[in-house]
Image: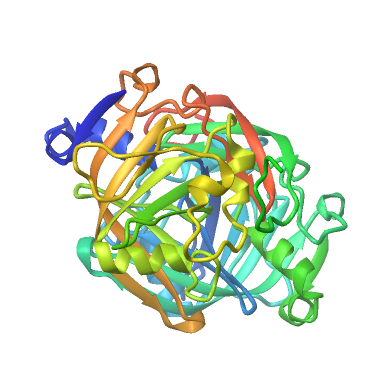
Length: 208
Length: 208
């Protein structure tokens, strides 16, 4: 095996280091986060850092860097308290990727990339109509990560919209039926194929 | 589309709600986190919440609930300051899943499930020999998430070991070559297939 230590990583050329370190966390969820500011301008940005925080209350988090292209997302969430998380699917991943470009404040990425904002049940933030799993969240906590001045933004799930065929008997949504895809590093888009669903694990020696 | 609101989610049967909410964050990274206590007893637990925090310094995080089966992981990291994150591959995902069973303190999950601890360059925590991407980390910050008494544990990457064939020219590791897999909800194991790697996005109307 090849060994890179801390020094070797810090001395890598910047783009290569970014690509390398972004590989190490494994496959990533791909979601479009949509917000709206007080002037009614919508914002849409792709995130690969959405993570499960808890099921009861139902909480999701994502990591954001204030100096990055997603800064409008954070500003709009702070002001309005509401946002939506929408699964990226195979049908529109190139449009989702394009939201990562640095558009000016007055431009909505919905218009720029050709995705459709849709408003439901008076929720302040728009959902992405093209997505098969759409989640509306209310901001609950913004946690500061001191070591590199990033934030973990945590919201409680207020509404979930999903295509009926995805719902499984066990309660989970089948993400392959939803055409949800996943990512690697900052630019890899991947389909998946189920290997197996395993039962709840209990202590035993599995070779018994 | 089906609509579940907050009330409907809170009234779901517990196991179904857990499965449902765990689906919503999308595909998840699958990693084995290995630690060791001061008596030399190793601990190994599967996590699906590892997330990229930053590339320079190179930081990774994961979410942990103190009352869960992974509590030995957190206790060992607090005491020793060191841990390893090891990608779960197609070759041993059933053994990785089995680490989620509630073994007693004095039992090492390495022994219980049949995976191999390997020590490298005097790093305190063991790596998982069967894994093709092995990362040694030094604890940097434990962030409290107040709303549900969980923690985001952040470490700086000290060492990375990976199979040579995975390294791509752009700097990233090819996770499919590493046989790394991903997960859904709490029990789904999935292989992936690259759709495409996209270029860095710049502002434009993509239909121009």
